[in-house]
Length: 95
Image 1 (cartoon, helix red, strand yellow):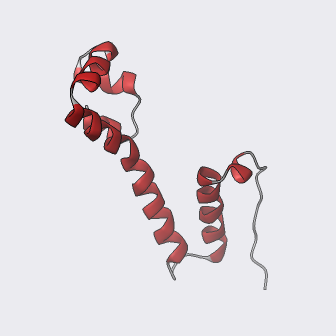
Image 2: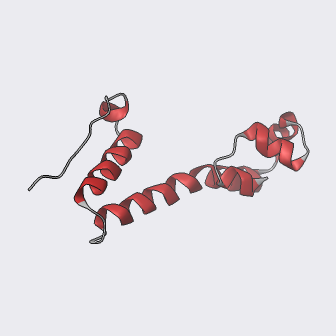
């Protein structure tokens, strides 16, 4: 189940996969500090992996600047409220 959470699967889907009710997960998390800590780390795993992938793309010399700008804006949307509800902007390279 923790592996499902690491992959950004919902609690409900992860519990269904593990064949346990969500209420059982909640009980376990309340009672087991180690499991609770592992669960919290798992919830953050995909954010870290996504941020790493975006950073790698932005800093890569093999990716076109237009693509880098797209990745940078996606990263900003995830991290900065000012960019979350912006309209879609197309970037074209000229010259």
